[in-house]
Image (cartoon, rainbow, N blue to C red; front, side, top):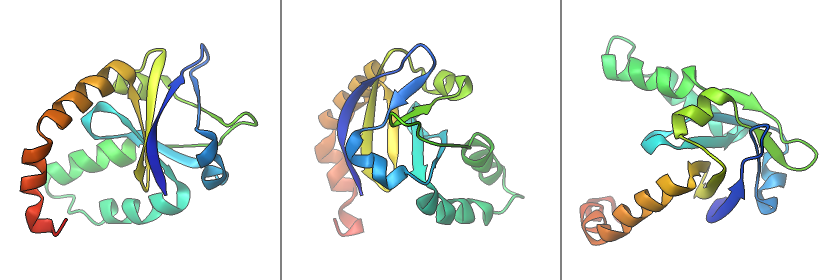
Length: 143
């Protein structure tokens, strides 16, 4: 399980260190892809498989299904952690998420998200300001 918020630097070669507490969960490699809200999603390979299967099952005759498949599957790539626990972020994923030097890695149960620090702060401020409305709208989900 991935939880928490961690601040990390992206080095000049485009690498970011994975929080040490998560490295053992990712030792078999990761799948990185464009996430929602302009962040990157990072899954361990086992968690990625059922998500990819669900996306694959979407009806390709629907434009939104094709667009979502392209976003998630077309931009996905495999990566391994190096001996120092870093992953290399390809330029196209860095560009998509607007990643600069300072980044935030958040644990969201079955995935990590990588955010540009300033974008994360803006997103978090908006979300926290409307947290009561968000909670109210989730009432029907039994949370």
